[in-house]
Length: 376
Image 1: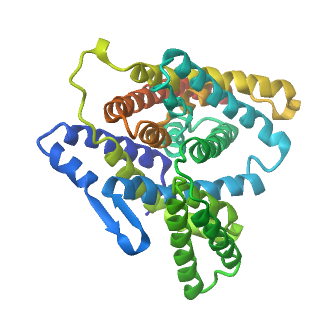
Image 2: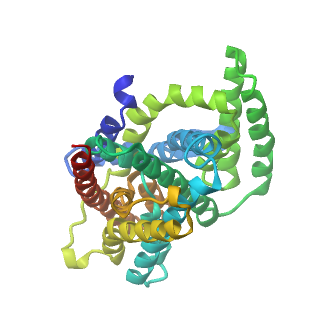
């Protein structure tokens, strides 16, 4: 399990799963794997009729968001976001890192039918970005990892709000209202989770909340967020410690593999959709510009002690362009009814995230060399 807790190895697993998905999708096994992904596994007595792919994106990924919400709550209570002063620079940087990529995407994709994909380049992948930092950033001061973590956590919160507000169709209020007491009871019981029966009841309540949120028309990952935010701190810490290896070792790689099961489009470079090029530019470049600009603005309002050196900001901004998991989810939601555009969007997210990883690793390595020279 220690292997799967490593940020570095988790990032390699994530990237490897995505590459394997693309390779197999374009092999003789491709049609069979895509058929398996699209086959349905209904649970009729619960009113659920989801494909294998949707069980992964709506079900398994809800656990990832559940853990992200627990981490967000911890950071707000005891971590790098536990005061307004600490949160100022990463918050403004995260907002800049959302606005700039979205603006670049909209400028490059003026078509109204395609511009709905603007949220795709606004996300930062926590697991991948921290893994890339761990790869070359050992000599860096702890504040850089703290900044990247805070930035990615706030970024995920913004992504959650985008999913809730922009990707909800046909809202059905009754199941959503019914989910509220399930979530509240989950939070109350989590403060008393010292026995196996209560832990089992928490699992049942969590599943019930997920089913009700799904039936309401809101993307079911929001249930994971609500449960993670309301869970008691100690129970949340134990739960995150127990589930983190499963999330890093199974949930995220399985999602990356399923999301990357796309057949490479048989068109020339000039025939690719504007969406493809917009993501390629907006993720690595937009994030670099937006996060750096936002952090510099935040520095102007922060106390001298809370200001962050420009070199540290640029290194973190480079890694912030690794969208991956959440960007792939946004792409699927935005172009659910335009499969060809979704395929190009998936490939663009993978390529753009790798480009951002390379840029981020180079910038981080340069910064690490700077700190090693200071130590020497």
